[in-house]
Amino acid sequence: MSGMEVSNLTKQTLRKMLAEGKRFDHRGLLDFRELEVSYEVSKKAEGSARVKLGKTDVVVGVKLQTGEPYPDSPDNGNLMVSGDLLPLASPRFESGPPGFDAIELPRLVDRAVRSSGMIDLEKLVIKKGEMVWTVIIDIYPINDDGNLIDAACIGAVAALMQTVMPEIDKDGKINYEKKTSKKLPLSKDIVPLLFSFYKFGDSIILDPTREEQESSDARMTFGVSDWNGQFMVNSCQKKGGSTVTAEEIAKMMDILPKKFDETMKKFKKFL
Amino acid sequence: MKNQINEAHEAVENNSNDSSTKRKVVVPGEVIVEGEDFLPGEGTRREGAKIIAGKFGLAEEAGRVVRLIAIFGAFIPRRGNVVIGRVSDITHAGWLVDIDSASQSFLPIEESPRFINRNEMDQYLAIGDVISAKIWTVKGKGIDLTLKGKGLGKLEDGFIFKVIPSRVPRVIGREGSMVNLIKEKTGCNITVGQNGWVWIKGPSIDAQIKARNAVTLVAEKVHVNGLTEKVEHWFAENE
Figure: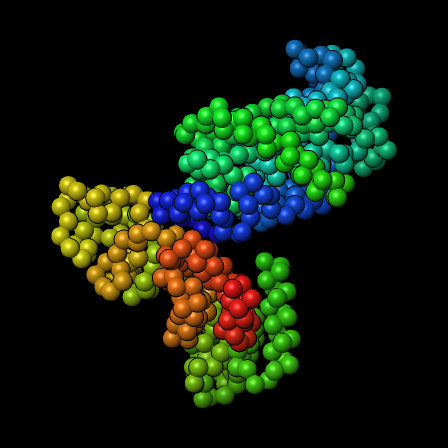
């Protein structure tokens, strides 16, 4: 909406409001906005999804390639996550070399997906030590109204679930036109999701709008997955100058399972 | 965007049902009125006897002048506009102010209403502070602002948010009717800058949230006829 940086005024007022548990859109502090997922948005990609979280809008595509495995993991397929903060999405984003946020976003998604074990990378080997599948996840924000990270992760998971393997011949040449009925080897029950908590003074909120996100003191992002009925935190990262206390992290840990179930329930409607 | 255009189409249909209304949605190139009597206003042009729209927006006949309120559009700074901006830097001669426009704007130290010590400029306006100011000159290089005038100066408390700048006339309404209605109903103090930024300060947080939602509603429903009544109705519903 605007290129003006967040003002002291808005920062102060938001803190006061959140301390009283109020938000401009009448949501509770930990409520998510409406989630909408659509599939097959790109014909050229092996799997794609578009996620809308309120006004935030992200397109995620999955491409498959063959390539050499990394020397330290000859019996594993490769996973690459890349993201591009398009100037189309927000007046804050400029074209040019990627900035801090443009590097952080795909890395967070990468870590959540990789360390949850959602993709069975060992099954992506075509010839051990010589040729493996490379899964490339591309994240393209269409509109940034805050909480891109959580939306991008839902998009990545949704796109991965849709991904269909293309046909491959003996020499390892891929025919992208022909799709097989084979899906990507995913662990059925593991779905990683990212949850970013934003701290304002003593209040903690989830799913901020851009205005809120920009005025926050600190961010804690957790990658969570459900494994055999047990919740696992696969990854976590903190950003921002302000500190987060142990009690606050304990509080977040209490919230996470509830929010995970809630989001999965919403997400499953679109599967 | 798509939604808004759909809404605009609905508005066209609504308009055709009610022929007595004077406001109508036009697209660029559309003939608004024909006749030598009319004068082309902002966003319109004359071709022969026809007055033609130059933008996608709402055309209305105000006496002989045909005006057009664009549905989308950036802020074009003009002399005398009151704008809301954020102090982005302090220089030896004044403050650099971000007013969300294409060109830089500058507030010289002499244009503040009282004397300010050059060594203590940040005590008066620090980086990140919000001011309402009047545009004094618009030059090729940039914009000069002034704080000399009624209601101008540093904004304390409350918050600011943005609406699409071309819709500001609708938010303000005829002679301020719309913004006065919202002020009255919520008891908030509202300043609408021509650059689309709106400042709201109210007696309570709830009143402020309500005022913001009302302003956002008006800015979203620019094309609707009889919006003042609709807003009154909205207030009655959200009591």
